[in-house]
Image (cartoon, rainbow, N blue to C red; front, side, top):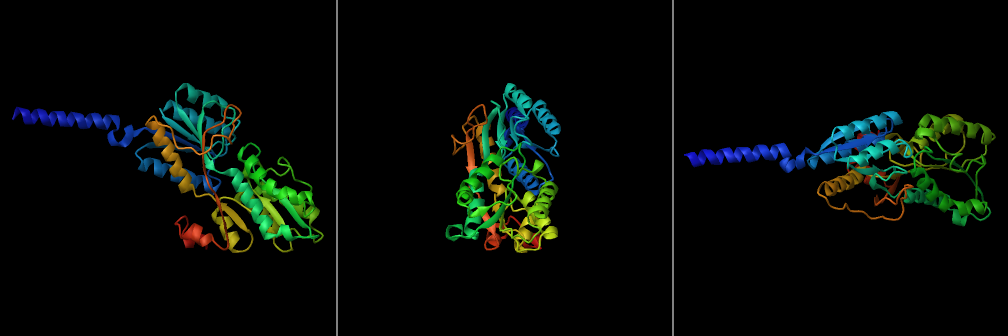
Length: 353
């Protein structure tokens, strides 16, 4: 009888010990996930997917959105550090503005995964998870090239304008650079002409990737350079929030044939515009895929292993080249959006009505 009681006590003690340490739940290890804003649909999806997959893997998650306020994001990350997060996943508002709080994470021995936006000038960044952002720009440029059949243009010329994102987002360099590497030869040959003359990254930037700011700038372009009936043939917009601003401006200030208009993220509003013929394409970056890769990274870090990476050359944050995992983007347009977005379960058909 005594042996049975002792065995029961020992079993209960072991269960309590495992529970206190997390047992199969990996210690309930806390992962901090810092997202920039809820104003853009894609970040809400990113955050939700990340939280769900991390919790399914047995981790506790502190998910925070910073309303595009840098000071608020810094404060949120500081709280994550003081609350004992073992790993930080950070999609920065401005990659240049987190140096001090990143140093605090490094001093605390916390690994940092930069999520989709590279954190600059910090030795604290251990890994980077993103889509191949240069390829995003390439695919946008190639779509315009194909849609206008630029290789067979002959003496014909096409008018193009450019809209990219926030100058503090390092991804802009890759989006815009990849697209321009495709389009620049046609600009140099005179096949593509930019009537506004606004072609540098700084000239075509959109603070905060804000739809209203993109719309206001594009309304000015239309009223200044296209009010006489000049045809606008293409607009390189780096993402869907800026493309939506362009589409809004076109709807109220332009009477010609709609131009080829690119985008990125397959936001619902832009997919609806695609169906209605107001936007030509959008780069599809399946956040479920990226979230899954990040969970794998977190899991490896927690186990003291090296996460899977596939790029050790591209992403220099000014302090070091950050080991990265790059997912491959694809484009959606009127011909394949159902297969990519609905058949895959990313959206329901009623979401797009």
